[in-house]
Amino acid sequence: MPTQNTPNAEKAPSGAMHAIAAFIDRLWNADDKTLRWVLGALILALACFNFLRDLNNPNHAFWDESYYLTSTERYIEHTAQYASHPPLGFMFMDLGTKIVGGNKGLNTHPLAEVKKIDSRTLVNGYDFTGIRLLAGVFSVVSCVLFYLIVLRLIDEAFEAFVFSLLFVFENAFIVHFRAAHLDPYQMTFTLGSVLVWLYTFAREPKRPILTYAAFGLLCGLSFMVKVNSLVMLALGGFSLLRDLWMERNRTALVRSLVRGTAIAGAFAATVAAVFCLHTVLNPRAPDPNTEAGKRDLHYMTTRYQDWMNGKAPLSVGVLWDASSGYYQYMKHDFDFEVKAEKNGSQPIEWPLMSKPINYRWDFDGKKTAYTQMVGNPVNWGLSILGLIGAAVLILRRRSWKDTDLDHRDMGRLEVMFAMFMIFWWLHIYLGTQRVMYIYHYFIGLALSYMIVALVFRIVSRRYAIVAKHRFSILCAISLAIAGGFLFYSPLTYHYYLSRDECELRNAPFPALICQPVKKK
Image (tube, rainbow, N blue to C red; front, side):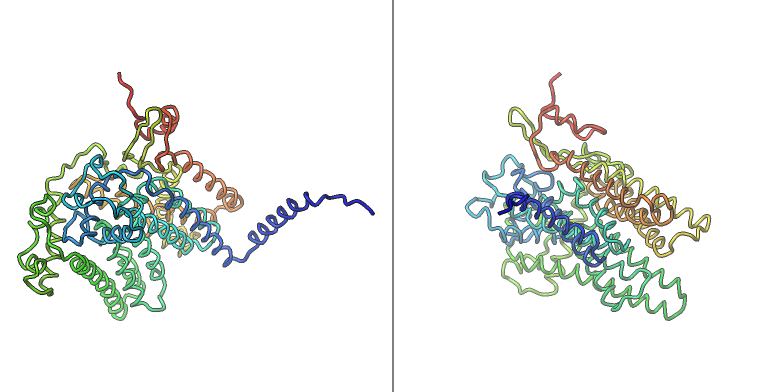
């Protein structure tokens, strides 16, 4: 019998390679709808890997977790309380602890007695997975929402995927969002409001009242996590003003007033509902013998305390007193806060990644592990280029009447750029009133990444040389983003580094002080 030229052992690898090549070929030649789904699934997978792994590392409280662990413990015990920020984020932290069900055998009650803990005094064995879980989940949702926003902005799947990597591989987002912080919840609702807004700007929604109300609801949810996102309501104002300007008649005025009322009504209803839910979920009166109880009771009216002590029924008056007391607490909580702090930064310098923050470092005798709030320099560099490019394109359109520019894309770019500037300048003002930190810039940073995508779309369709090398440029951007992320990932995930490995991360700019500091 004739011998076979190819042994069976060699057929399997050849068949596998053929199958992989066939899959890549089908994917490359897939229709746009299929490609959008596949790349969206890839964004989801990358986001889960980046934001959901190893949530209990470091297993110590860092930065604002020192405050939020105490707030969450009072939620666990259903004790009435007030905080520096609205209550919605703490509700999610409480829900995460209930889902995981950790720390049941530990005495965590002392957390409820104070407003801030010293992480060194935290009970041994405390598991942070639960309190950090939903922050990671919301971060993954944010990545998907960002992909959908960019896809809506530029209407091209591969470009949307590449520029979504700016969010997915942003070290500053990952290190901050994987912790028990409020920002991932705020970011998710903010991005949701931006996505809904895109269905209102320069187009007529299928269900306009419902769409504008959804925008107001999402802005309300974001506001009930951290109040600085209130500025995002301006996006809805841009849509209403544009429609009114385009028609300039009584019908358009009435229509804009009705839709504006839908935004305001949904926003107000959301704020009221969250405050009421917070009150009802926490009927237990604070302990006046604890530091936290004394501070909270100072802002709680007699009527509210009577309800908590079982002396009066729940009423609209009780809900009003509880909510207004919360507002008064937030209003005066920063009265005695210093406006200068070593980790504080000036908002005017935020686009330059001013003042990265060392959240924590741990030395094992040989190497040091860092939890460092430092961004991906590739992303931040592209952000600056995008903002400069947007300013140039807008100036050309408005000053030289450049009619070659796509009006739909330019309209979106102008609004996104205006929204970024409003956000940025508002926080520059806030920086004169209280200490600010670089993570307060996160919404502005996300807006700048959307601007990068829009600028690239406009430039690549206007200039032939960019259009010709578009795919190569996008691939190079992807590799650069991934490279920047990997380079700083040890600082993001609390990995141990030698001193030389640490100092390597101080190029091309000083990112951290390598520990332990050498004695002179």
